[in-house]
Image 1: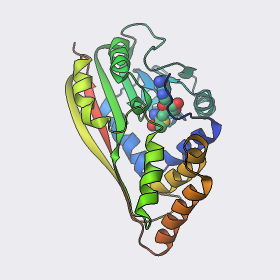
Image 2: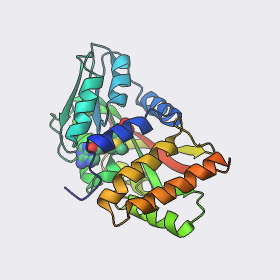
Image 3: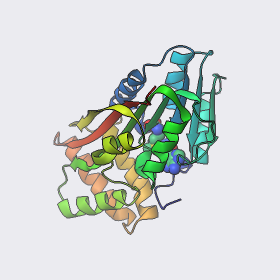
Length: 262
Ligand SMILES: C[S@@+](CC[C@H](N)C(=O)[O-])C[C@H]1O[C@@H](n2cnc3c(N)ncnc32)[C@H](O)[C@@H]1O
């Protein structure tokens, strides 16, 4: 285990709100589409979080298939289980991405979204995804390039300190820059990369970055040297920019799709 962000109940609920915004709904649609799921398929979701992916994939694979989610956070597994309580072909368990509790060649597809950036040994996790997939199985991995994040702030020095505090919570801050090569090194073929930009010029609860601001306010004073007043001052600046019609947030995520050779 490394000292990455702890998805306790509060952080997990904030993450759940982020993943229900318009941009994340669309990113999920693109990612699930890339898996080419069919009814009856067996799917593995590593870092299943609040279960939004699992819930949507379960509708595609139907009761003849199954979705198995694993996550290291007890709070996340609890939220995901509650979300999918009426879908008996979905199941969640607590497990680490580098040591999956499944037999070799158990799944037709594997998805892992915004999880590997928290995993110290990404290459070991990718080898696990490869082991758990059947020959011909499809992989979809998506992570954020935190280095591409831009927030227009009045106090640039404070903004830099807040962003640096946020980056402390990750094992990898710019993982997408090396992911394609890592996926190929794990034994996958036909790897392709796709950009998922997120751009907010409006400040409000329907926007991705709005919920990130609240996540920062909750998490950073607890786990970094930043004081609550500093993070709140940064958040107030962004809110005021929103009220003045001058808000700007931009950020890139990347989706990598590949196959285990037949
Ligand atoms: C940002 S959330 C993404 C959740 C989900 N994939 C989604 O996109 O909706 C990251 C998740 O990865 C989980 N996680 C972090 N490190 C992990 C590890 N080593 N093994 C399994 N899950 C892990 C966290 O607990 C958290 O639920």
